Amino acid sequence: MSDKSEILKREEDFHDEWAGTIDPQEVKVDESFTGSTSPEGAWIIEQLGDLKGKKVLELGSGAGEGAVFMAKQGADVTATDLSSGMLEVVKKVAALHGVSVKTAVASADDLSQFGNESFDVVYAANLLHHVDIARCLDAVKAVLKPGGTAAFWDPVAHNPAINVYRRMAMDVRTPDEHPIRRADMKLFRERFSGLNYKFFWLASLLVFVRFWLVDRIHPSADRYWKLIITRERELRPMVSKLMWLDKMILKVVPFLGWWCWNIAIIVRK
Image (cartoon, rainbow, N blue to C red; front, side, top):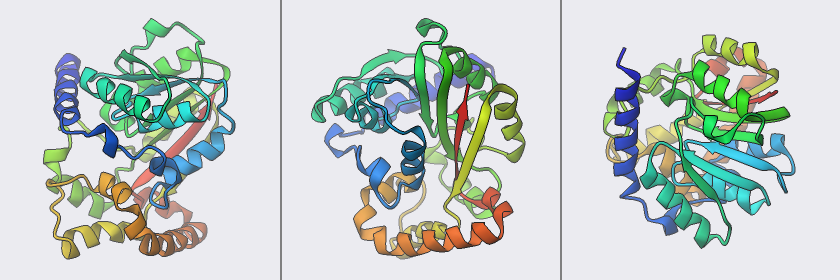
């Protein structure tokens, strides 16, 4: 296992480099929660309910889709990331959308700068598979107010086809990633109450096959999980049908959820 400081440095450097390639005007804020190819975000927002006036902490904010969207719903948002470059992007995206978002450089497993019981909501998208999950959840529990809610969504580890994709996409991934495993759910249950989760993208993963075989986009040439957002309007007819099929399959055979691409998780303190 690599030393923690080395892992954090690799993550920071990777995301600083990525931040330098992002055009803030191209960041899809609303589409990341309302589009047909964003079922995880839509489900989480539905579960969180009215965010107006609530104090929200986002971990691993990236380009700021989550922080800015929640600020547009009236939340008082603080965006955090290891990458100062990404936080600069967040500020620019927030300004383009006419909202204010506070930013702070922070590791997801050390949130002590914020003090205990400081936030109503903690949100993190595509973060847990980059960090020590147990340490992160301990930090999240500490900063949540009593009765507060934490929401996460991340990739699942068990689908063989997705694992092939991951091996092909090494140029757009960091080497220390570890997608969510079934055994990891114990870590949530040990720390929180009211655990609720939902799986997404099973048959609908045929979109990835289209990117590879029809559009001839190599997984290391572009991030498929960004393409599904930027090409949402084009993909909508295909994705809508496939997600309906996913719903039917998972209703009949729920254990196949662990072969989906992503899982969204809601917990309460």
